[in-house]
Length: 143
Image (cartoon, rainbow, N blue to C red; front, side, top):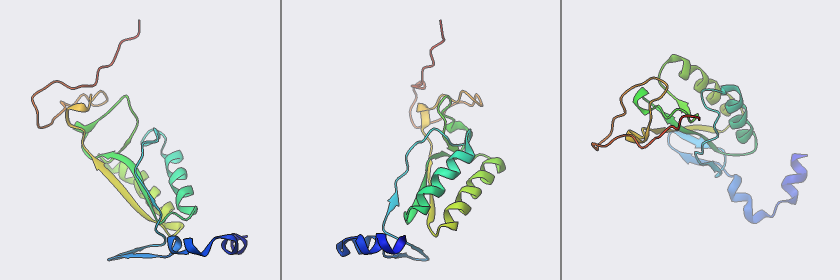
């Protein structure tokens, strides 16, 4: 089937599927998956891994995570994101990278710390940031 799709494609677009060298690695195509939040992250790692693997299988050259908190003071609960706080996080992120690599794509990660815009509701850490102001995240109690 791949040959039928290739022969039906306008040759002007062939450049999009050519490898791009970015020392020391090469992306298999010019298609780049921009980071976007999918609300799976650490709570639904198998779904998140499968989604990224499917994108790599579909000819994307680089597949990236959603924003990934790299420290507990960046906890954005009640929202679901990817995090990189400990070995448990490293395990599912490594599994995601391996699945992306199985399809020949490169894997990327978007590291983030949202400062005072984090509520730190899960670990109850004190939000940190460059300004002296309270956190902006307000959680309403149900009536």
